[in-house]
Length: 181
Image 1 (cartoon, rainbow, N blue to C red):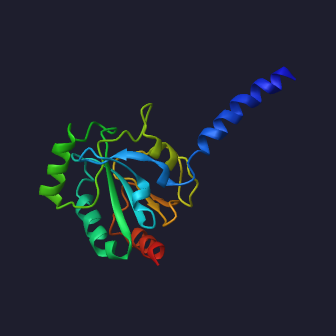
Image 2 (cartoon, helix red, strand yellow):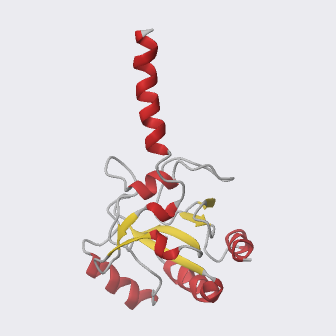
């Protein structure tokens, strides 16, 4: 009986921890300008959460992400960019440098957040949540820059796309259009 108790107590603790967030609105983050906010500020919008990097082969996707954001923002769609240096140190050092790079080179005006850990021991709880949520695509660690997480208007992960999936691809655009209806 004591062995069962020892086994169940850790299990109950782990279950309570993973169930603490039922959608993305519960996460607090720092915007690239240093202001703290929760994703609840985007409640009711369809979101495309993307881990980004400034010195990556996929960095030109910033332009495509901005075009997608511009095309559907009036229908309640937002791209949210999360710069990360987890993959080969391909992100600039400071938030100011990242913001300047994105604005000058790609005209980015969608919301950007402070440099964020998206993998490893220091993973931000948002990305720990996103990488473990079931969806029709795949779960598990982010494998590279520019993975994309599509969130419905209720804050639930509904699709996940690999880095190689262009923001202009029919698959991603069709998923966005279906979500904003």
